[in-house]
Length: 483
Image 1 (tube, rainbow, N blue to C red):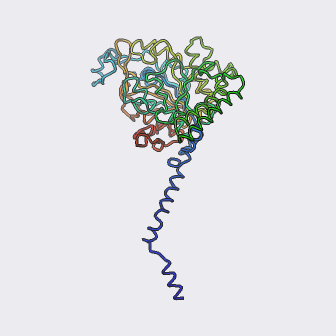
Image 2: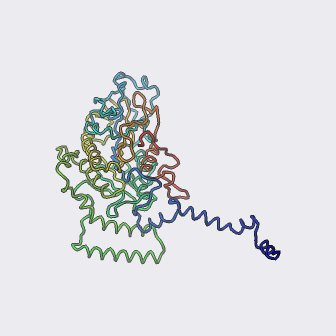
Image 3: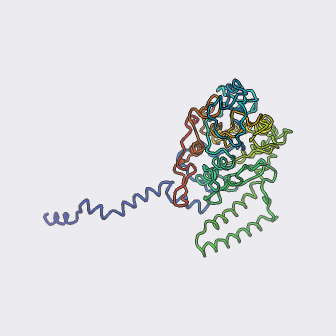
């Protein structure tokens, strides 16, 4: 017995010896935990290498699966659309400095007097939301809409403000929010791009960099399509026999794979291979997507495809195609405005005619999109976002226009995870600056990602020696609008 006890004593180790011998093991336990986390583990990188658009799990249960961004390029006036300010009429014709006190520098500093809205406002729906006569059709949907009336931007000129709205930075070359969403979640359709831009006729200031993938793999950049029967150049296969085209692609793929094996992994070349395959699949799926002949005449009339005003019909087709895209699993669809013959929503002069032409083009199609999504049950899983890069001043530029105003403007959201019929934030009595619950673009991005199941602080990409995210080091949820 004593001998046995001596052997046991010799075999036992102290706590210090145990920690020394098991140090690597503890590291392995930590590594296993990290690899099990979707933010750190290998599955994401493996999925990106094998199929960049493969669906990937979210951080938490999503309220929405996809986004439709109705981009009102140029900066629609908040005090003429959804932010009713009756005090402007009381001070009509007065100097902005006398009424507002300090007036911030504007784009052109051609400041006129306080100018009330040329349009009447009325309350709609059970929520009693104020909407101007510019949007009689959208007014019918206000109980499904959450208005954020305290948005701000860091930039007062179009190019930087556009970059900021789309990428979270006011500089060129960063990934667009649609690219970030594709990187984080992939797509549910490998025959269509995960991020699509339906261009109504005007690419916004800043150009295609608004839809770029930046430092993310090229597979996530926005694919720009036109709302026509042939939405993409060279979309029709040149070969009559699909087998011939498939054989050509297989040969190109084999040559590229041989190059990859000889020189090692190459992100650009691997992206090119994936893009060839995506393009091949798109030649089969895009023509079917663009063919709306199967839609009922009732649906076409609802959207306004029968309208004589050409720009209404153009945006109607964009909205209808957007619905068809998210039906087919496209993750992010952005719509740009049609060319109404003026300067987008950027009315430095002739506010009345300019805003009326723009609203006439988009009002009925947007309302139809909301109604159609709701009718088909898709609104519950689709986040619809409306807005521009900034707002406009409550005082005139010259005699009949409005200059840029980044200090307070309105955006709205509807659909998956949004509480309809509510308002977040408040501007002052003139719609000039925010006085309650100030939000910025980073907060918009954080909220959009949250509704799609992504924690914006965890969606990062290693670039230039640090982990970069869409919201940079900012971003808080716009909680009043969350269901």
